[in-house]
Image (cartoon, rainbow, N blue to C red):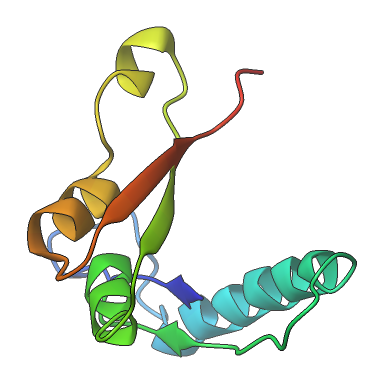
Length: 108
């Protein structure tokens, strides 16, 4: 699953005038395809590909309707950031209708 928010271009003069939404979708598709290739190395079940520009928390919550458990990652880069949830993990834990497990990223 890969999701993103489209930025508002007008208030950001450093974004090129020829900015296209398709650029985000192309990058998202590449990220998702790479993740699927990695998952297929160890996946024992089927893999379902989902993409959305509605935002990651919205996509996770919609997809998880009726689920028994949601597992999300946390990408805290420093010890201080690792101690708090990211925006997606926070939204999912607040609005999920089932238990949520947040798995922190391994320290680098």
